[in-house]
Length: 267
Image 1 (cartoon, rainbow, N blue to C red):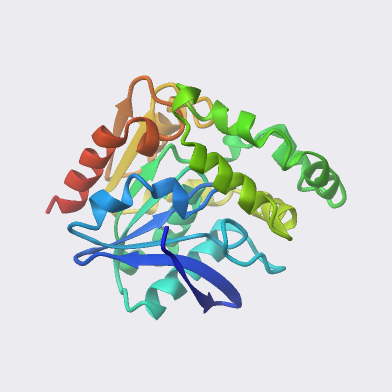
Image 2 (image 1 turned 180 degrees about the vertical axis):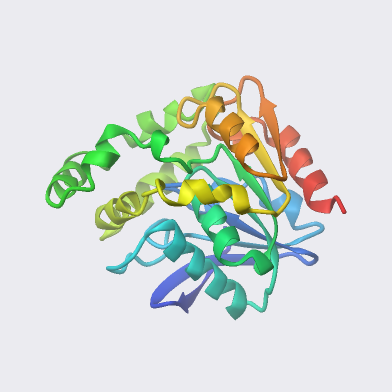
């Protein structure tokens, strides 16, 4: 990906700004990067201006000490949009990036054209016990130094219905980003920022038209989460892809790209 850098809110942010038309902002999931959208960007940029970024602490964006909550990430996204002259955009997000998208829609409704969320990670009930334990000082540091970068390829495979189709490039990008200094500390802060108890009640106030795209066989964010979210959001629709795990933008690429483009172009 031919990305560039801009310093925003004290972090050097890696981003990509391509295409012309109504703006779309792409937000990747936890332990991921712009590369998640490799098969989506070419389809989008034909009719849209696409702004994709590595969120703070991930990919090739800086890992400064500080707040890594969805709200803080959303503020950084807003600042980057302003720097690039974008007032309002459709926000498209995957997994934990969806919590950033919802935080964005809550904080900046005037800047949120619509939302498209793939296999969203947005509820307290979704957090594994390791993430809950990691909130304790010292415990989190131990867990993340011991286990965070272990068996990366195996964990990535969990996200796929058919692990055979995982792009080798995706595995390499994830592993290279993991090796960057400060990665574990930033990931731990992002996990500590996943306190959804208070905010998850407020999702019902989000008015923006929302498309939920879900892999039927997702074991990371099960379909029941999508069914809960589509009931809670007042203006949402859920589309489910069979024989597909946590990455519809890779495993169901043509169908999900078509659905996304149709949604973005609807009046």
